[in-house]
Every structure is written in C-alpha cells, then in structure tokens.
Image (cartoon, rainbow, N blue to C red; front, side, top):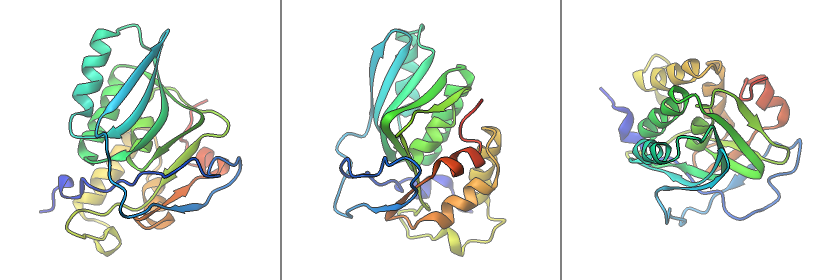
Length: 204
C-alpha cells in the first residue's frame, strides 16, 4: 500500500516577483527545474499578536511552530509572506491541524504568496483572509518515484488522504481534484479571486 510520505518532495519555488500578483488573474508560471530549496525551515517575525511567516515547509514544521507558539503565546494570527512549498506533505497537514487546534487565524499578506503545500498550511486557520494582491498557487503533486496521481484509481488511499484533509479544513472535495487538473507538478496555477471564493478558501 502506498504511503503519503513517498511523495514528500512535490513543491516548487515560485521564482521572482514576476507579475503574478495581478488582481483577477489566474495563470501558470513555470518553475525552473534546477531551483533547489535553500532553507528548509520556517522563519517567524513577531509584530504584536501577529507572526509573519516565510520559508519552506519541511519534516519539522509542526515542531517548529509548536516551539514558536510556546515562546510566544500571545500570537493569534499567522501572516503568510512567502510559503514556497512543502518537502513533506504529511508533516504539512499535521502543521495545519496544529494551527486549527491552537485556534490561530491565517492571512496571506498583500503581495505575499503561498504555493502548493503552503496553501494547505493557510487552510489551517480558523479565520482565513487573503489580502488584495496576494497569490494562491496550486498544482498536481508528484512523488519522488514518479507516481502520477492522474493514473491512480480515484479510490486510491492517497487521494483519500488529501480529500479527508480538505474536508476536515472545511474545503470542498472538488478543490483537490481541481488542483490535480489545474497544473502539472512543474508549473504553478494561481487562482483567480472568483476561484478562491468558490472553493471557500477564505472565511467570512
């Protein structure tokens, strides 16, 4: 039986500022295949009750966030500046669940972005806000062994892991299937404001 961690390496850095923050646009941007993650951890900058978060989600992200909140118990909001993706999707899901258990809110800041697993992190927020000009990028996953999710049976347990996570976060199942079809793994599709609202990514 396939395990979720076999496709832990499935995130791509969004390269450059580009014109990807154009309001109302949804489009793809190619990520150069030679780009590597140089900082496989999160960084936090505290300002009042808000922590500004950047970096790459990795195997220790849940522990990093837990330690940070223990040292900063006044934090109520995680402001996502540039979450470039995930190296371990299972760990990313557990980090999002921790955000929900801690009753933290999430916001993607103006001209900030979340990509791939970064979107899942954002979904952990009890209250979720996306500021004008922010980017939300999705694509199909790909595991290190080249397993193509499009070739898996729809009833495969790997699909169920994702679907159950989204339902747990209050996101419709169709968001998962949309993400698979929106873009291949080597590219990123940025959602339009209409798609963001249609999939309930923000709360009211």
